[in-house]
Length: 423
Image (cartoon, rainbow, N blue to C red):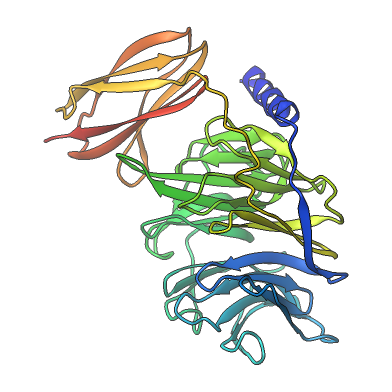
């Protein structure tokens, strides 16, 4: 196992340094000299928002005009997270920390000209916020009191605390799809399907004993199955999961922020490392990473993609906001490479089927079967194999009828097959 981990670390380093030598052209936008903390995009109303130590700034993307909503001279206005409302174009929610080390949520319905404190937390600063329609989520972190997972069903006007997630200090959350929310913190990663009433630990293969700094989620609908990618960073590196408890290390160093191109655009992942680099992976299955820091000044602290313009925005701690435009077209097409393949027969089946896995090269092959909720129900294969094809049998046993997903991970990438169990 140690040899496998070392090999993964070396591979990640090689992919980062050996990738093609292209680079982004960074364009300065605004806020040089401002102590910035985070960045977000309001995709519904085409705005970029940046949190600061005294409030927030925002840019209307159509005009490029920036406006400042800082309360200069106040103590305890630090904004650590930002959220907006799909229905109300003037509503902004900011997660903050006051002078007494308590967190609070501040709501404005006029883009920050006025506002109200709508929630004060017992669990320290409000570290992250997200929403799905009118339902909003927030989480808090503190080293003196338990953190809180918060839910609002009225677009942020009132909030309820939901427990049972196993986290003491919460750092990040990510909205998945079909009601799935992932919460990260000192105890790893937990998932809820019902707004925090029930929880499932999905830390799985993540190294135990390491808190999570940040989460990011990407989802799309494939030809036969709803797909999802989840990213989590700890002190040992950046990890990837398909929304379940099986994690694969992508990078051997910690990232303070991760951004994923939203659904509907070419797939990109970007990360800010703790040593001040911006690195980007352009191809989901090849994981070729390039260092795009270039001449970006200052220390980057957060980043966000714009799906429509296909731009990447990066905010630095004190040197302003920067943009790399149309980052998708900067990359050449990925080289053709052999991929794993997976087939199943009979399909539909009851209760046994054969799964044929074809590997383009020698290496470890892992074949898992998941139910419709994303839970792993079987692992028919986990072995180091030579290149070529191997057939394994799977007996669904007492599992209920329905649709299942078989996923093969091996040299060259992944492959999947949709299985239909008829009972």
